[in-house]
Amino acid sequence: MFLRYVLVIVSLLHFLHDFRVCCDENCKEKPVFTPSRLVVKYGDPTSATCLVCQHNCTNDAFGLEHAVGYTEENGTTISWKVDSLTEWDTSPQCYYNDDDGNQCVTSLPITVYQPPKNVYLIFINHSGPMFAGHQYTLQCTVQEVAPISNLNVTFYRGQTELQRLQSSSTTKEPVNETFTLDINPSKDDGGLYWCEAKLELGAEGPQPPPVLTSQNIIATVHYKPQLKESPDPEQITVTIGDPLHLNCSSEGNPSPSYTWRLPSTSRPPFSGSTLSIEAVTSTDGGQYICLVSNSVGNVTKEFTVDVNGMMRRWDDSQKYLSDNPHLVCDETANCLVVICIDFEIDEKHALMEQVAHQAIVMQSILDLARTLTVDQ
Image (cartoon, rainbow, N blue to C red; front, side, top):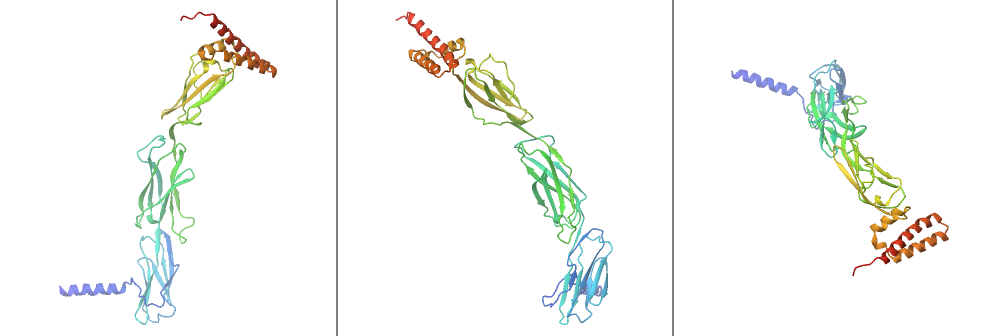
């Protein structure tokens, strides 16, 4: 039994002696691989040449250790070849022992890769339109790719790059990996979403790098109406007889509808984005409220319209003075007469006639008031 343990220990020491994994720092020159690094697609053939040394390896203690493939020697040059590389983690080592007893070793770094077999994109736990201001998670899944540490995954909206991610895994064999991105869409963030998986293998790797893209996801963003003009209340002054246009134009998704609340019931209901009145009358003054709504929300816009100016009709003048009795006085009457004279001098006959009937109505009211008996 003891003899068996001795044989095992001796065999292990012999194995460790032949398994060269280090290099003495005193080596004057190290073996040189050409190329110095290999990037090989899984299953493809590959080869490299090792120049063991040029000046300092006069003994026969040199060689090339390898787990796969075969070698051919020509002096101190060793060729290593593999017909089909199917090992994910392998690194040949070229070595020699110099005259001083130092062991010099160089390893050949090999990256064995496999492009992704499939890439697909989903929204996690969501379907249908998105809503502005809400958070959603995109998930990009890459299947059977190696090595995962060399994979770059990029999320896109249209041609706009959103974010680029990498895996922290160091696994060399093919794996499936998922990458996620949280987004908070605004109203302008609808469109095509997709992801791209690119295997970046450096200058020694295939050019251009292997790339595979996911399918496109068409995303729609719903958002409540937004006014194209300022949402602040507007104060508008208009002259009787002139046109009036109140703009409540908005954008939203779904398309918004409009409801107007008018100060007078004499006008028919209106449901457009811009309210238009061809000729304002004295009854059109007051507050206008525009309600814009869709399935997501609503917004309101308020307008306060003051109507003044020269009344073209006798009835308008009479109603305006009845609504504003504090203006009925001798000073107002005298002012209207002066304005009439000025318009006539300036040959503005139409304006003079419009003011004249106001002056006549004003004077008639004053004359009538003087004849009334007021109880003391």
